Image (cartoon, rainbow, N blue to C red; front, side):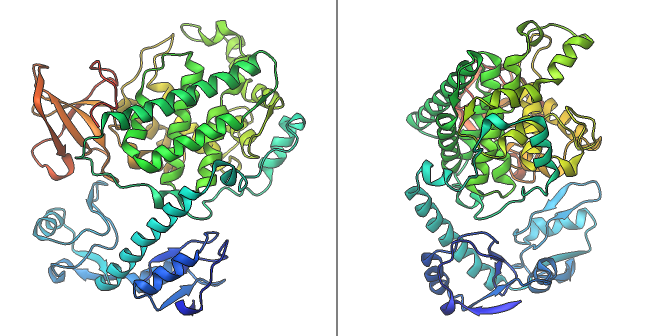
Length: 507
């Protein structure tokens, strides 16, 4: 590791390597921008040196050596912080990273038979890191607000000659090393942390719904132009994706509740928009930069574009498809590429997403039976979002699943090797097994709506209790963090539209 004085740092557009605090915490990722304001903030927070990861250095080894020390549970002090999440043999999360080992947590660890715990080596250094990261978040947020959609789009490589798109050209693109890892400043770092107990104003909720309706209109406009065999420009739809990302940055819970709004329009339009919402959420949770999340959103909106070339009788068919109908549906990724030839203003990754969204990591997907290493990460993100939204939607051949059952099905697909586990964890992190906006029945018989996830505690979200067990409205609804309750739990997941209310109303 190269030790660099903060006084010697200057603004850098793209860092070549990560920079670490002496305590082992990463302060800047590779490809991230270091602003002048960042350098000043480091000095203000009392940081004297940074450590640059050099070729041959192991980030994992440095972090472990600098950050953690293993301590017998009996020797853990009251002010010690858990450094590495602790899980029980059955997979239950017992302690989160960053939790203080108080009496309650110590007893819980003892109950699960935990003998030793990795704790933070230097709690004072952690406080210094936290101060800087909070300041860095403010700086990045202010810098982001000065940027326009056009300036963000300039960071994205676009398809220059869409008329030349073919299955063969996309296959060559997929055969090359895929540059699909997170790169640059993670969008996650600027997402606002909104207290779940704070009720949102009606005009804020309405603003989210207006942006949603505007985005739906753009999707409809692009698809209708292409159905009419006209050329179209995707820039307007991209601008709406950018607006959706801004909603996520402002309030993740309200943003996620949008995916449970009823599809009042043609299924294809609403599905495209909901897949984009879920894809944006997952890509953000996985640490992608804003321009990468923008690319995922573009790809998600257009992933099922080829379905406009599938016969309507097949799309609306009730019951199992016959072999001929199945073959039509399995051709829609290739048909999507044909349609893309008439669409200007799409990122280079969009054709890959359109072509590969129905591939599966074990090779059981279509159109090529590609396996995990040959499937672009953005397509894997969109694939999970696509399947989840399809399952919770009403279709001509079946009623909608509850979000909980849909998520269980997704996890079953992970076990079978069809979906990447890390991608599904990204979806789950803020959606949870009981997604924001969904209805649940509690163990005391009352009915509640999920208003926020507890990251890494997928079965214990925040809920707003709205109805008595006899379904009479509660005069003063109660907000409960189920992760802090031992007596109350979720007994049953209900359909997304169990009660006649917008999913945004309870938040």
